Figure 1 (cartoon, rainbow over the protein chains, first blue to last red):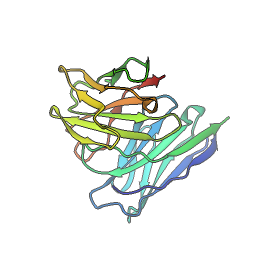
Figure 2 (cartoon, rainbow over the protein chains, first blue to last red):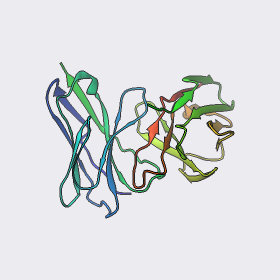
Figure 3 (cartoon, rainbow over the protein chains, first blue to last red):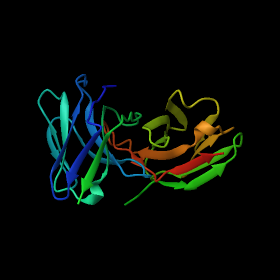
Figure 4 (cartoon, rainbow over the protein chains, first blue to last red):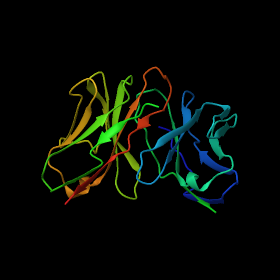
Length: 110
Length: 116
């Protein structure tokens, strides 16, 4: 499994755009990049997944450069309720286990 | 929106006792998982289950643990003789086999297990 590295924590203010970058230098050709969000005392929740270039959904955007050795999760105009831990995962195949790292603890302040 | 449910939300048990944690995965999903998260630590994979058998398990999932799908809807995790270090939040998850190359798993709200 490709190892991922992401900042331990980030602070932001309401209304700002937040970008969380994840490094995955040894990503394999058939690996996808997936991001999860976890609120305290809740299970992780899938946010977005991509393979290359840019993916956008109603919650976030995911930017993946051509070499795929990193990715950036972009959260537009965060609110206090976006305070959570965000995990970057890399892998492939439905049915495989998820390997969570420490994630990035995002604190959104008023 | 369909969701994974888990019962109980909180279970307190004495060391050495058996516990069964219950989960109802999303109805058309065929892959099932258990994870745990000790307070303040990472989410850790325990076991995955497909086609009525274990497909992967971690080192944590030793002989004290077992999983079962007793009927068409429930998925259970049994810990035979609980230890203090089993105290954690246990999450059940499920995923759709139709989503090839997807890491999208749906997690339940968790069961907080406290071993005293």
